[in-house]
Length: 227
Ligand code: DC
Image (cartoon, rainbow, N blue to C red):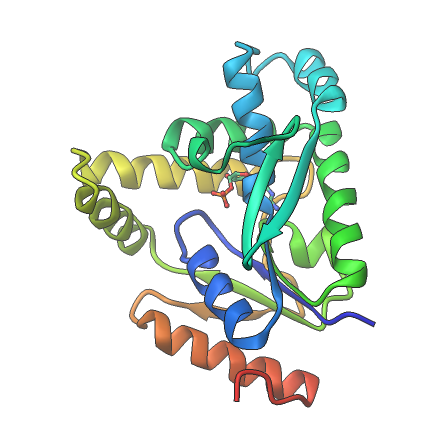
């Protein structure tokens, strides 16, 4: 039986950074489910499909092929066989993913893929509905969050380091809007599961968060991962 760790939380809470480090320390596979929604979104954007057109989005979602493969521990997202890893990490794709992940047929297809992966592999999986829908029986569930101001500052620093000019207030506004949509959609909204451990990373370093989470995982699974 595989061991499954679920991490949910809002955009920019550090889920992927933390999940990647945890996976490396524990020898698990990191599954970034947001990248799968982003891959679909990238397809909709490049094919000029309107995010409000549910019929077109859902029918395109049926025909498009999203798969994950792993090379030296790194997740590669394939869209109809093409590696699109470097095309999906921008705000336009992130917002489109948030807008189109509200549709049930987009979700059903990706959830099935995620569940299949977790069945046979020890995974750290992050997203919005992992503990509630994808892996309701996960061995450990986390809800990782941080204040919107801290999340906006982190994003601002990240973009500035890349030389991209941006407005921190606009970033925070976008974050709040995205949270609101992800938390209030009808299908699989982002929620804090009753059995999830809440971790607020606002005033913690990455190392502190990782150490705390490994400690909780080891307590709950009676294992000694990462030691
Ligand atoms: O985690 P992320 O920012 O890469 O995710 C992009 C969008 O995809 C997010 O705003 C909502 C959607 N998403 C989702 O609905 N369910 C998931 N399990 C992961 C992401």
